[in-house]
Amino acid sequence: MTKEVEGVYPAGGAHMVGDGFKVVNYFPNGNRLGKKISPFFLLDYHPSYNYPPTNKKRGVGVHPHRGFETVTMTFEGYVAHNDSAGNSGVIGPGDVQWMTAGSGVLHKEYHEKEFAAKGGSMQMLQLWVNLPRAAKMTTPKYQAITKEMIPIVTLPGNAGKLLVIAGSFNGTKGPASTFTPINIYRVQLNQGGQVAFTLPQQHNTGILVINGNVKINSNETVGENNFLLFGYSGNEIKAMAESDAEFIVLDGEPINEPVVQYGPFLMNTPAEINQAIEDVNNGKFGVLKDD
Ligand code: MN
Image (cartoon, rainbow, N blue to C red; front, side, top):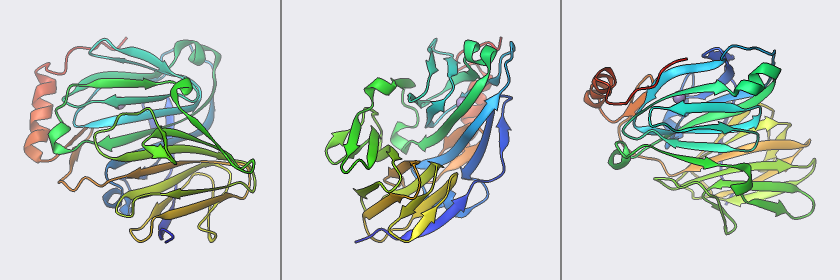
Protein backbone atom coordinates (compact mmCIF):
# COMPACT_ATOMS: atom_id res chain seq x y z
CA MET A 1 0.00 0.00 0.00
CA THR A 2 1.22 3.49 -0.86
CA LYS A 3 2.54 5.54 2.06
CA GLU A 4 0.29 8.54 2.60
CA VAL A 5 1.73 12.05 2.31
CA GLU A 6 1.08 14.14 5.41
CA GLY A 7 2.39 17.44 4.08
CA VAL A 8 4.93 19.34 2.05
CA TYR A 9 6.83 22.05 3.91
CA PRO A 10 8.80 24.85 2.29
CA ALA A 11 12.10 25.99 3.76
CA GLY A 12 11.93 28.70 6.39
CA GLY A 13 13.92 31.89 5.90
CA ALA A 14 17.69 31.52 5.74
CA HIS A 15 19.72 32.27 8.85
CA MET A 16 23.43 32.20 9.57
CA VAL A 17 24.94 29.59 11.84
CA GLY A 18 28.04 31.35 13.11
CA ASP A 19 29.39 33.42 10.22
CA GLY A 20 29.88 30.54 7.81
CA PHE A 21 26.72 28.52 7.24
CA LYS A 22 23.71 30.11 5.56
CA VAL A 23 21.03 27.53 6.31
CA VAL A 24 17.29 27.00 6.20
CA ASN A 25 15.57 24.97 8.91
CA TYR A 26 12.75 22.46 8.41
CA PHE A 27 12.37 21.19 11.95
CA PRO A 28 11.95 21.62 14.85
CA ASN A 29 11.21 25.34 14.35
CA GLY A 30 8.10 26.87 12.96
CA ASN A 31 5.99 23.85 12.07
CA ARG A 32 4.51 20.63 13.38
CA LEU A 33 7.29 18.50 11.95
CA GLY A 34 9.32 18.32 15.15
CA LYS A 35 6.90 15.97 16.87
CA LYS A 36 6.43 13.76 13.83
CA ILE A 37 9.98 13.11 12.77
CA SER A 38 11.69 11.39 15.74
CA PRO A 39 14.43 10.08 15.92
CA PHE A 40 15.42 13.11 13.81
CA PHE A 41 15.28 16.33 15.83
CA LEU A 42 16.71 19.12 13.70
CA LEU A 43 17.37 19.59 10.02
CA ASP A 44 19.38 22.57 8.77
CA TYR A 45 19.99 22.61 5.04
CA HIS A 46 22.49 24.91 3.37
CA PRO A 47 21.43 25.46 -0.26
CA SER A 48 24.27 26.18 -2.66
CA TYR A 49 25.76 29.59 -1.87
CA ASN A 50 28.95 31.13 -3.16
CA TYR A 51 31.26 32.56 -0.48
CA PRO A 52 33.89 35.15 -1.35
CA PRO A 53 37.53 34.38 -0.46
CA THR A 54 38.61 35.16 3.08
CA ASN A 55 41.74 34.72 5.15
CA LYS A 56 39.71 34.69 8.36
CA LYS A 57 38.15 31.65 10.01
CA ARG A 58 34.59 31.27 8.82
CA GLY A 59 32.15 29.08 10.69
CA VAL A 60 31.06 28.24 14.22
CA GLY A 61 33.34 28.57 17.23
CA VAL A 62 33.66 26.22 20.18
CA HIS A 63 30.34 24.87 21.46
CA PRO A 64 29.17 21.77 23.34
CA HIS A 65 26.74 18.95 22.45
CA ARG A 66 25.26 16.20 24.61
CA GLY A 67 22.58 13.54 24.21
CA PHE A 68 22.36 13.13 20.44
CA GLU A 69 24.28 12.78 17.18
CA THR A 70 25.10 15.35 14.51
CA VAL A 71 25.19 14.12 10.93
CA THR A 72 26.94 16.50 8.52
CA MET A 73 26.70 15.85 4.79
CA THR A 74 28.62 18.01 2.35
CA PHE A 75 27.58 18.29 -1.31
CA GLU A 76 29.81 21.22 -2.32
CA GLY A 77 32.63 22.80 -0.36
CA TYR A 78 34.76 21.61 2.56
CA VAL A 79 33.87 21.69 6.26
CA ALA A 80 36.64 21.30 8.85
CA HIS A 81 36.06 20.33 12.45
CA ASN A 82 38.02 19.92 15.68
CA ASP A 83 36.88 18.60 19.03
CA SER A 84 37.91 18.44 22.69
CA ALA A 85 38.90 14.77 22.36
CA GLY A 86 41.60 15.74 19.83
CA ASN A 87 39.71 14.56 16.75
CA SER A 88 39.81 16.65 13.62
CA GLY A 89 39.00 16.21 9.96
CA VAL A 90 37.61 17.63 6.75
CA ILE A 91 34.21 16.76 5.29
CA GLY A 92 34.39 17.15 1.50
CA PRO A 93 31.81 16.75 -1.30
CA GLY A 94 30.01 13.42 -0.90
CA ASP A 95 31.36 12.76 2.60
CA VAL A 96 29.28 12.27 5.72
CA GLN A 97 30.43 12.86 9.26
CA TRP A 98 28.36 11.02 11.85
CA MET A 99 29.31 12.39 15.26
CA THR A 100 27.91 10.80 18.39
CA ALA A 101 28.08 13.56 20.98
CA GLY A 102 26.78 11.17 23.64
CA SER A 103 28.02 12.24 27.10
CA GLY A 104 29.52 15.38 25.62
CA VAL A 105 32.01 17.02 23.32
CA LEU A 106 33.16 20.53 22.63
CA HIS A 107 33.75 21.15 18.96
CA LYS A 108 34.05 23.83 16.28
CA GLU A 109 32.95 23.70 12.65
CA TYR A 110 34.59 25.85 9.98
CA HIS A 111 35.10 26.27 6.28
CA GLU A 112 38.32 24.35 5.59
CA LYS A 113 41.22 26.84 5.44
CA GLU A 114 42.21 26.50 1.76
CA PHE A 115 38.58 26.40 0.66
CA ALA A 116 37.91 29.57 2.64
CA ALA A 117 40.97 31.27 1.11
CA LYS A 118 39.82 30.52 -2.43
CA GLY A 119 36.12 30.99 -1.74
CA GLY A 120 33.50 28.97 -3.56
CA SER A 121 30.19 27.16 -3.34
CA MET A 122 29.02 25.49 -0.17
CA GLN A 123 26.07 23.12 -0.17
CA MET A 124 25.61 20.90 2.86
CA LEU A 125 23.23 19.83 5.59
CA GLN A 126 23.29 19.01 9.26
CA LEU A 127 20.83 16.61 10.82
CA TRP A 128 20.47 16.00 14.55
CA VAL A 129 19.62 12.41 15.41
CA ASN A 130 18.27 11.84 18.90
CA LEU A 131 19.65 9.07 21.09
CA PRO A 132 17.50 6.77 23.19
CA ARG A 133 17.74 7.30 26.96
CA ALA A 134 20.04 4.30 27.36
CA ALA A 135 22.60 5.77 24.93
CA LYS A 136 22.47 9.49 25.75
CA MET A 137 25.62 9.28 27.88
CA THR A 138 27.49 6.91 25.60
CA THR A 139 31.18 7.63 24.92
CA PRO A 140 31.52 10.23 22.15
CA LYS A 141 32.67 8.92 18.77
CA TYR A 142 33.03 9.87 15.13
CA GLN A 143 32.25 7.96 12.02
CA ALA A 144 34.15 9.66 9.20
CA ILE A 145 32.20 8.22 6.27
CA THR A 146 34.03 9.21 3.11
CA LYS A 147 32.44 9.27 -0.32
CA GLU A 148 34.33 6.08 -1.23
CA MET A 149 32.73 4.17 1.68
CA ILE A 150 29.15 4.83 0.57
CA PRO A 151 27.73 2.10 -1.70
CA ILE A 152 26.08 3.24 -4.91
CA VAL A 153 23.07 1.33 -6.22
CA THR A 154 22.60 1.86 -9.97
CA LEU A 155 18.88 2.10 -10.64
CA PRO A 156 17.49 0.21 -13.62
CA GLY A 157 16.44 1.92 -16.84
CA ASN A 158 19.09 4.66 -16.61
CA ALA A 159 16.95 6.14 -13.83
CA GLY A 160 19.93 7.30 -11.80
CA LYS A 161 21.59 6.14 -8.60
CA LEU A 162 20.93 5.70 -4.93
CA LEU A 163 23.60 6.04 -2.25
CA VAL A 164 22.98 4.12 0.96
CA ILE A 165 24.34 6.11 3.91
CA ALA A 166 22.52 4.33 6.74
CA GLY A 167 20.29 1.28 6.95
CA SER A 168 19.68 -0.63 3.75
CA PHE A 169 18.06 -0.48 0.35
CA ASN A 170 17.13 -3.73 -1.45
CA GLY A 171 19.84 -5.60 0.44
CA THR A 172 22.60 -2.99 0.05
CA LYS A 173 23.74 -1.80 3.47
CA GLY A 174 25.02 1.66 4.33
CA PRO A 175 28.19 2.20 6.38
CA ALA A 176 26.73 4.27 9.25
CA SER A 177 26.29 2.54 12.58
CA THR A 178 23.16 3.79 14.37
CA PHE A 179 21.67 3.35 17.85
CA THR A 180 18.09 2.94 16.59
CA PRO A 181 16.79 1.69 13.22
CA ILE A 182 17.46 4.38 10.60
CA ASN A 183 17.59 4.49 6.79
CA ILE A 184 19.22 7.45 5.05
CA TYR A 185 19.58 7.55 1.28
CA ARG A 186 20.91 10.13 -1.15
CA VAL A 187 19.09 9.72 -4.47
CA GLN A 188 20.14 11.23 -7.82
CA LEU A 189 17.60 10.74 -10.61
CA ASN A 190 17.79 11.64 -14.27
CA GLN A 191 14.76 13.41 -15.70
CA GLY A 192 11.99 10.81 -15.98
CA GLY A 193 13.88 8.37 -13.76
CA GLN A 194 11.93 6.45 -11.14
CA VAL A 195 12.70 4.66 -7.88
CA ALA A 196 10.54 2.79 -5.38
CA PHE A 197 11.19 2.17 -1.69
CA THR A 198 9.47 0.02 0.89
CA LEU A 199 9.96 1.43 4.37
CA PRO A 200 8.39 0.33 7.67
CA GLN A 201 4.91 1.76 8.15
CA GLN A 202 5.51 2.80 11.78
CA HIS A 203 8.69 4.74 10.96
CA ASN A 204 8.83 8.49 10.57
CA THR A 205 9.82 9.23 6.99
CA GLY A 206 10.56 12.39 5.03
CA ILE A 207 12.17 13.52 1.81
CA LEU A 208 14.23 16.69 1.33
CA VAL A 209 14.54 17.71 -2.32
CA ILE A 210 17.86 19.49 -2.84
CA ASN A 211 17.88 19.81 -6.64
CA GLY A 212 15.08 19.82 -9.20
CA ASN A 213 11.50 18.61 -8.86
CA VAL A 214 10.31 15.18 -7.79
CA LYS A 215 6.86 13.63 -8.10
CA ILE A 216 5.98 11.39 -5.14
CA ASN A 217 3.38 8.62 -5.36
CA SER A 218 2.33 9.80 -8.84
CA ASN A 219 0.50 12.84 -7.52
CA GLU A 220 2.53 15.08 -5.20
CA THR A 221 5.15 17.32 -6.81
CA VAL A 222 7.87 18.41 -4.41
CA GLY A 223 10.00 21.33 -5.53
CA GLU A 224 13.59 22.19 -4.77
CA ASN A 225 14.29 22.96 -1.10
CA ASN A 226 10.94 21.53 0.06
CA PHE A 227 10.53 18.79 2.66
CA LEU A 228 7.84 16.16 2.36
CA LEU A 229 6.62 14.31 5.47
CA PHE A 230 4.85 10.98 5.20
CA GLY A 231 2.07 9.76 7.50
CA TYR A 232 1.66 6.35 9.09
CA SER A 233 -0.49 4.49 6.60
CA GLY A 234 1.16 2.42 3.89
CA ASN A 235 4.80 1.52 3.37
CA GLU A 236 5.52 1.98 -0.35
CA ILE A 237 6.95 5.17 -1.83
CA LYS A 238 7.47 5.92 -5.49
CA ALA A 239 9.50 8.87 -6.73
CA MET A 240 9.80 10.15 -10.29
CA ALA A 241 12.07 12.97 -11.36
CA GLU A 242 10.31 15.71 -13.33
CA SER A 243 13.74 17.22 -14.03
CA ASP A 244 17.21 15.96 -13.17
CA ALA A 245 16.75 15.82 -9.42
CA GLU A 246 18.40 14.94 -6.15
CA PHE A 247 16.80 14.21 -2.80
CA ILE A 248 17.60 12.85 0.65
CA VAL A 249 15.40 10.20 2.27
CA LEU A 250 15.27 10.25 6.09
CA ASP A 251 13.54 7.30 7.71
CA GLY A 252 13.66 6.08 11.29
CA GLU A 253 11.89 4.31 14.10
CA PRO A 254 10.49 6.93 16.48
CA ILE A 255 12.01 7.13 19.97
CA ASN A 256 8.97 7.38 22.20
CA GLU A 257 10.60 9.15 25.13
CA PRO A 258 10.30 12.68 26.50
CA VAL A 259 12.55 15.22 24.74
CA VAL A 260 13.89 18.35 26.44
CA GLN A 261 16.09 20.62 24.35
CA TYR A 262 18.18 23.50 25.57
CA GLY A 263 20.43 24.89 22.84
CA PRO A 264 23.02 22.22 22.04
CA PHE A 265 21.73 19.68 24.58
CA LEU A 266 19.01 17.12 23.92
CA MET A 267 17.99 15.17 26.99
CA ASN A 268 14.93 13.48 28.54
CA THR A 269 14.42 15.74 31.59
CA PRO A 270 15.06 19.35 32.69
CA ALA A 271 17.33 18.01 35.47
CA GLU A 272 19.55 16.38 32.85
CA ILE A 273 19.76 19.71 31.00
CA ASN A 274 20.84 21.46 34.22
CA GLN A 275 23.45 18.74 34.73
CA ALA A 276 24.77 19.26 31.18
CA ILE A 277 25.16 23.02 31.77
CA GLU A 278 26.90 22.37 35.11
CA ASP A 279 29.22 19.78 33.52
CA VAL A 280 30.24 22.18 30.74
CA ASN A 281 30.91 24.91 33.29
CA ASN A 282 32.98 22.50 35.38
CA GLY A 283 35.15 21.50 32.43
CA LYS A 284 33.78 17.97 32.18
CA PHE A 285 33.42 18.26 28.41
CA GLY A 286 37.17 18.80 28.14
CA VAL A 287 39.01 21.78 26.71
CA LEU A 288 39.04 23.23 23.21
CA LYS A 289 40.39 26.66 22.35
CA ASP A 290 38.98 29.07 19.83
CA ASP A 291 41.77 30.32 17.60
MN1 MN B 1 28.00 21.56 16.50
